[in-house]
Image (cartoon, rainbow, N blue to C red; front, side):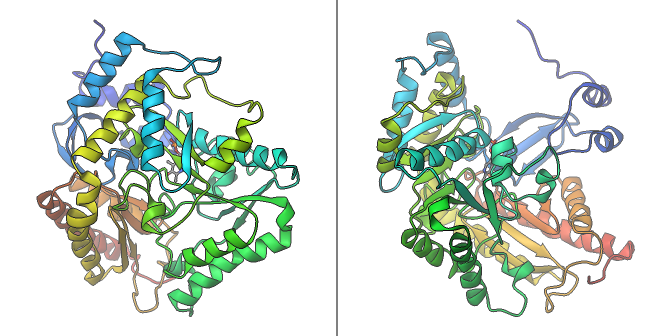
Length: 464
Ligand SMILES: *Cc1c(COP(=O)(O)O)cnc(C)c1O
């Protein structure tokens, strides 16, 4: 049997990686200089690297390993499914047991009238599906002009041509001719950074009403849908003021447009309910899913759509699909992941026990001299770094300079915590225990202390 070698010295692995492997969202040359950290195995919330270090993964990989690492059941299910039926497509009047069972399970878990699933291999692909699906929906309803999708600046919906355009990341738009036509962006509800003198409540309303003004400006007859993450993830875990979502829902109901909730991070327990839409009381017409759907053990994504959309799309041939839509192994693994989340009451525990425990400890970080705000919903949280809390000041250094310095301290202290600009974010596996939460917080505080000292030593403790 072929073995993927794991016994080469770290330096050799790093050299091979630098020579042959291109990393997503990275500057290859910098990586080649610094050398990547080689992760070799993982269990629960802990990663192990090629030097034998144990690292607490407060990001659950990329927001996805909800049930934690090392669950044998998923490996068993995958092996069994590979032996029985490793692959078959669902394009040509065929289906198979894992995809049927998974679809029915998702229809049961999803709120309201969301009962039909179109599968993809990833969140990006699923959002590409959504873009085509909502436009096709309106065309089939005799409104072919309803084509524009409204999104938000600093949203993340993937990095393919379609989903990268739906997202509002300027760095993504800057490369490869994005965004494609027919997508419009409004401002995000990030009160800390953009709220100025307004109260969070007034600011939330004002940002929601941008949606209304944008629809009116474009003409309701030209707008297909609004897409948004219930809590922005990759944008820095931005929790909207409480006034924001009720107003957005009112606008979507009054105007005849569809609402797509991108649940790729918020779904499958991350916010303490099965879906972020339930936590925030949203009523989407489509939910994008991926990541926690399989806890990252297999690549799979999809769109859960309403009865109404399924009925309209169902009346025509939808010329869309992926070779791996509803892949049997990925579907079987996702189903087993959902079983574990449900039977072990992991979502309930996040809502009632470990989530509140983490919230108390995490929000207390706001007492640290470099932390301006600390926000957390379920198990996704962020802190804003600032040299002047009272003024909600940004650092004078380029955004991300200070965040990166703190992230480097976290890495050195065996804690994976990411930075987005000068916000530090966490999204740990949902199975994290109270004891492990204590370790997470201790390492975060130590990293903040060391980071603050490093920032001061570098002469960067200054407001913009
Ligand atoms: C990660 C992510 C995506 C893209 O998913 P991929 O599987 O990486 O393509 C889309 N939307 C949100 C909210 C995400 O966090």
